[in-house]
Length: 205
Ligand SMILES: N[C@@H](CCC(=O)N[C@@H](CS)C(=O)NCC(=O)O)C(=O)O
Image (cartoon, rainbow, N blue to C red):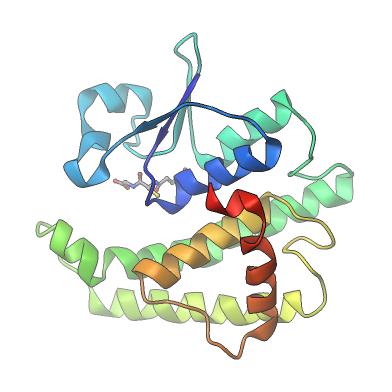
């Protein structure tokens, strides 16, 4: 088994942190996105979407999509349960994880692809300033919503650490470091949560 990875990408990091929380070691194969290795025919055979991460099993089966890969490992090794144990936990964790993807990762991605770094790397693309601004606004609105939520509960989905905390950490760190979208200092509950999850050894994976 091996994980096709890209160290700087937020999505592969989600899987690496998930594996670290489970205590599972999987050999990593670096795919250099800057060199376009993810669009080479050999890689597209593994994932026609041309994106990392991709988990390749020993029989050649490939699983793309961060959540799908994490679910594979949750099924393989259920403890610690990062997708929840009770029906209510499972539902709440899936709900917030999806909201984080659609309502935070998507606007952060929109600001990123229309920002200066991607414009330099991809001169064939025309950045749209309004799309960048709208992405930034959407992300900032969602940060405020998370701050309100975390005033009432320690983690994204309630009392326990879950896959939703991993998603949020990876998106926020990417937004802060590469998209100039660090949450405002006044969002103290969000920052308290960020400190808590960053102190977990898995965050360095
Ligand atoms: N929905 C996918 C998204 C994967 C994704 O967008 N990966 C980025 C790296 S963080 C990528 O490979 N981007 C290259 C591209 O879009 O061409 C997941 O959750 O794994």
